[in-house]
Amino acid sequence: MSKPSQPGLKPVPRHPYVQAAYAATNAQDGRQILDIRVWEMAVIERPITPNGGWDIAGSYPITPFPTGLDIPAGLAFMADRGAVSFTAVTDPCHPPHWADGTIEDAHIAPFKAHFVHEFDLSRGTHEAIYDKKTRRDVRKSQRLVEVQAHDFNDPTIRSRWVALYQQLMTRHDVAVGAQFSAASFDALASVTGLHCLAAHGDAGINAMVLFLEHDGIAYVHLAGVNHDGYRTMSQYAIYDYALRFFGQERGCRLLNLGGAPGHQDDPSHGLAKFKNSFATGTMQSHIVGIVLDKKRYNELSAGCEGDFFPRYRMPKGIR
Image (tube, rainbow, N blue to C red; front, side, top):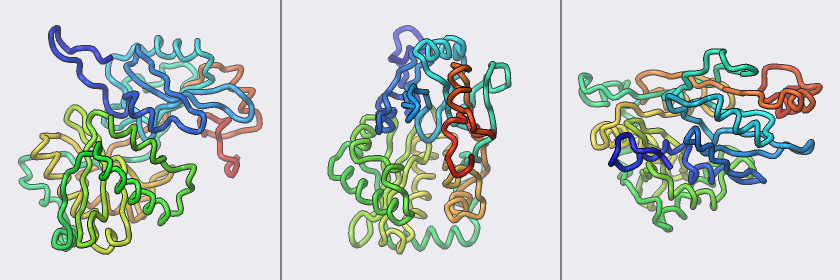
């Protein structure tokens, strides 16, 4: 459980990305949830195949690190359980204060830049940052769809979401094994801080975006869209609505729009350009990897060279 900030107050919920309910969305293909109480963080135990053993990783896509962590205690807990290594992509909005090279056998490297929108009342409305094309596309989309907030606990809404998400995955040729399962979205529905925004067109809901919110910061989590949603440019209307919703109604100070798809920055990618049109800047995420069992790590990594962490999970194509 999260601890009260002051005596007599209710516990503050954990950040959504480290809640056990969220970790359950990543627990598939033999992966198990591990709750590191000393860090107030749920992570994923991953089997190492075919060589045996296992390691620990933060949940996809990012792991926020609270301030004041007892780093040695958490690492000792994982090592005592026999884990070979720990890996996480840091939340650029909550970077680990210990990513300074002082942890032995640590690998810390820049990963991807996240587009962010910092809410600033002195700028006036959020539309002040739009260029001419973005303003035109938002208004065009708003004429074709209406954006509404929905309860993701509603099975009908969740079923519609799964269909839209799967259509988006098919459009971008994402392998089934790399997708979230329908069951994982049942688990996601119980995560504290989840918001669902949907675009309603003439043929019904044609696009949805899921967001997570914690302590004044909101995050774009996942999107689902069908052919009609692309026709109506529904994500323009949803993102514009999100800036009003989180900036004005929810009083957030920052919206993290995420980065480009893939494992590296690609400013030329269409999604990166789209997110940039709603952003006021960028923030850098990092890969943090820590070797917990040096002997076993070196055994598993034999023949694998390079900066990839952990080396024994290096994709075959880049070995």
